[in-house]
Image (cartoon, rainbow, N blue to C red; front, side, top):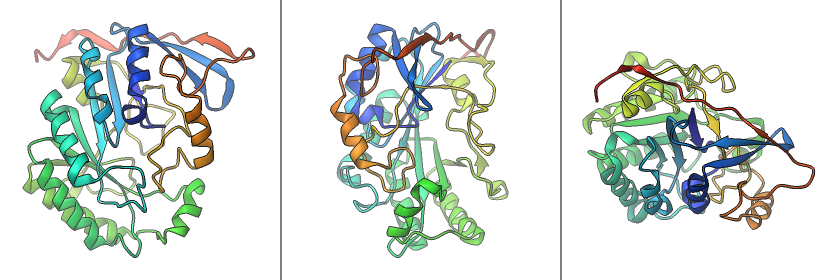
Length: 312
């Protein structure tokens, strides 16, 4: 299986101690977001976990914990944008802290295992097309030699975030604006030897050298682990999502980044209440089992095809 850590929250930033403890214990509990009393027990043995995909905006707290992952294959998706505190209120300074953190992580684990995400791209009075192009160029320059790929996406106006978008003056982008931005960005990326992909986008930009990408990227995982995988497309994701199936271990409303465009952590009060229940030694993230909870073993298996090896 592939472990997603996590689409729902920033575990490397805020819960790295918990994750390392779960690795040591060899299992984790995950509460079903659609049925709060239903809990799955997920085995975390290296024999079962083919690869771990980390999603983060600041993995600094995870750096020391990487020594506990020697038996695991993994890579990071590191979101690094040009937004300020009005959009990403709880992130540290990009130039002083986050870009150097990206560079250190790349030096530690290899540039092929650190994917740069510049997303979501949104437009308002402050964050204009010119602003994005300047920010993208600057970050691309700083990350040259520290990653092989950048992933972009354009903001989706989910019902849950429309109120925030209206408050921030964010407007829908036209297809022409998307194409114009993408054309300039891919030119900047090429200048710094970066490939570019989109994430779950309907718009087709392949004619300018931008392919449809996958966050849970089967080809990248196969490259890292050195063999073929039998994993299929994740049926639980959007039709435009190219990710293969994975097991998510995060929890909604537990991320303290406070990003105003986020669909997974909309209620700040709920986030604060959940964080109060955080225990790095708990089987669950931000909580513990209640008497009326039902824990079920979720049968996991490796997807490795060890008969076919790339010889890497």
